[in-house]
Image (cartoon, rainbow, N blue to C red; front, side):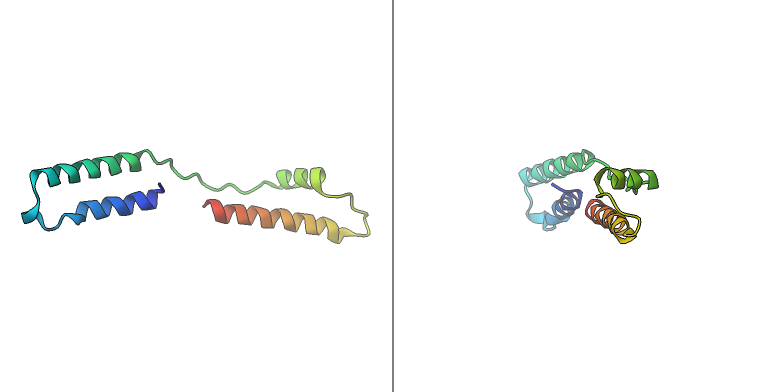
Length: 97
């Protein structure tokens, strides 16, 4: 379960038992158990890492390994490869941050 969903569930449980005059001891125990379980699950969620862009050296290496050989007269092919690498990097960043 995602951290956002766990947080929402915890808030719902914490405020969900508003009609306290109608709650039994079993209801309070259940609420306490649910809150404790949600707090534990939230604490176990891994921290999100900071995004790190590719370095120029990494991009150069990718171009050397995967870009087709480019004739000097056709620089646009090399530019296209660089552009593709940057677009893939941007999409990965979008999906992971």
